Image 1 (cartoon, helix red, strand yellow):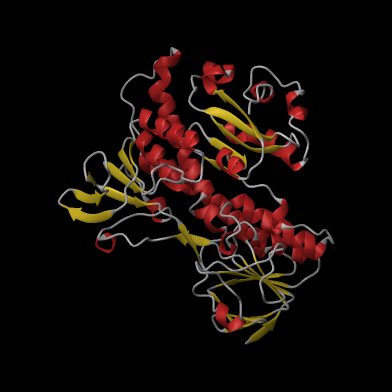
Image 2 (cartoon, rainbow, N blue to C red):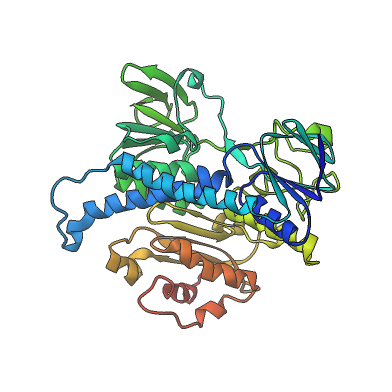
Length: 457
């Protein structure tokens, strides 16, 4: 049965629901299609549940460290993973239910549960229904990638999604992948009580970051007892009587790691391979990401791609910003573009990393004359008072324009403090705007002007 709409939104991640609400408020008749859980990755297997787990792990760490602050916790410290999981499930579920209720309550909306597949540039089939519209928005997200690791097909493993069902503490968790997902789970489960080993193919953790940032993060994890094996150029997996064996082939250390469980955190891939994109003539790149222009339009007029499936960002905030860009162009006569935004993201280990703009290495490679300011967290009184002195803050400035090119704040509050720098970058103001500002004492933010006052070539 063919059902006409003004717009179809495929997927209910961070971009889709907000866009559907805007389109509905503008008087359009909107079909919303969701094949699985409302809210996408962030709500179900990403930001919300993982950061809820991070909070539980931080509480466990705080109890263990209580004697450092003159506080006696008393008795043995235990982690009830069933209760930890139940708390995570409740918080995630409330968000998921909220998204679904909002969508089902849209005055001009119709929700379809099922897998959407294109039949033409203007028609999408969901079960027995064929939905048609002049505007179609793809917001299908991504999933964990499975790299070609020898023996992996014969070994049970978790990924970020299946990890959500775990309600016990694995005796020895081997994390394959040393990027954001892997590092957050590694510290989290170490704090829950697991032995943890990270196996990373590249020479550094978080290979996209500067080497000093990578080294500092490695130090934070190793100080908590996480074993890090980098340079693992020939990773393999096999069953053992007690669990699993992961071959690492590193230059230093044993050639294999024996553990009880594997978490695979080695990248993501877009959910675009079963949408019938070819029937609509929609172009994708070699990795399966939908090709879009600076306003998130595909090569087919009337079809847009938002969120993780377009390869223009892999974070909740980039997905939401995609919605804002599309809505501004389509509904507000406000010509916004993807290229206007500044790359920013966080790593939510403890202490967190807040990043904005270019790395120091990228700035040097660009050929600019740059100035760099750096301050260790050991010289930040708020960090000292809290007993959290790991990390540093660093800023990179264009020596000619005096504009901030990028910054990294690895330390207590770094994921919040970075925004004071990010906002000035968007304003295209010189660094002196922050340098001359009076900030509150004692805070982490007050040391940003101090750092900017000590810029060096």
